[in-house]
Length: 360
Image 1 (tube, rainbow, N blue to C red):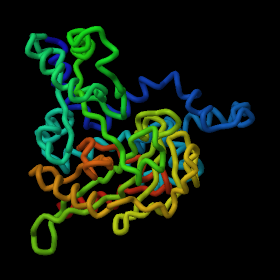
Image 2 (image 1 turned 90 degrees about the vertical axis):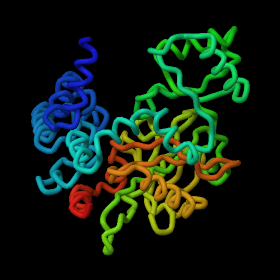
Image 3 (image 1 turned 45 degrees about the horizontal axis):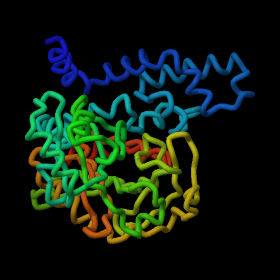
Image 4 (image 1 turned 90 degrees about the horizontal axis):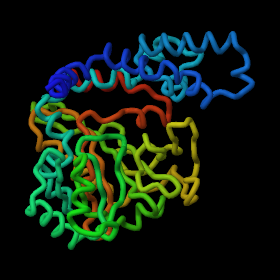
């Protein structure tokens, strides 16, 4: 009962900037120096007076601009004025934009990976099943898993609601003594099981170990004729590192900006540790100038998807290139992060988004 009440309250307050700032401050109050140490040298940290001043400025920026502590460094806030700092859509304020752009019922639907799959099944171009913890474990449910695993002995497991690539992993029917045991392993917490995407060569060249994706945010505004017009809002490439299955920017991946007209990468890559890369550190592929294969097909897909959710004006679409089926939808993110599109070139996008909201 208390859990249900908390979820109801959380759904309302999670879009509030005061909640996100206060929650972050509470959760990270003991980690501030640890975060500082990721971006500062030991010599710089030895200056206690400078460290105290930096700490005060980081906390001040959190509550004034909503910048989480890593964003303070990643966006280059040190020594910059208030106008520069206020130009970014920081994590502390990001969620406040979505109620202004999207109908809440769409948010509830798009945050559920299985409901999203059912809505856009034709764009996913692969099979998915859902195993929910609250559902009864019946012979029929186990049989559904067995039928799926017979077609796809190896599969991807994703939490139904999680974001940032958390909990995503590869699993196999062969890892269990029986189908019932395999079902029980997922049923404990609930998850969706997905057919694995066999990545096309054009994208695999960047990093073959991970399924590399495009994040293409769409914004629907009123066109000159009063009809809905779909615009792309700073699409990015997302590439994995080392042996990681996940390409997610929040899970150690690298991001680079894509020219929306040509589909060509026009920046170096960057990660959330503040590192910049002319080439992918594992594959050696140069980011700047890399041509996204079949770009116009990807653009056509997100334009089609964006218009299928009435009342939704902003969404971040993740696409992967399948070797057999072309571009396919990986996820829809109606509360998509906006860090990658700003961090790579340290360019704030807040005013730009405000202008688009005025046109919705």
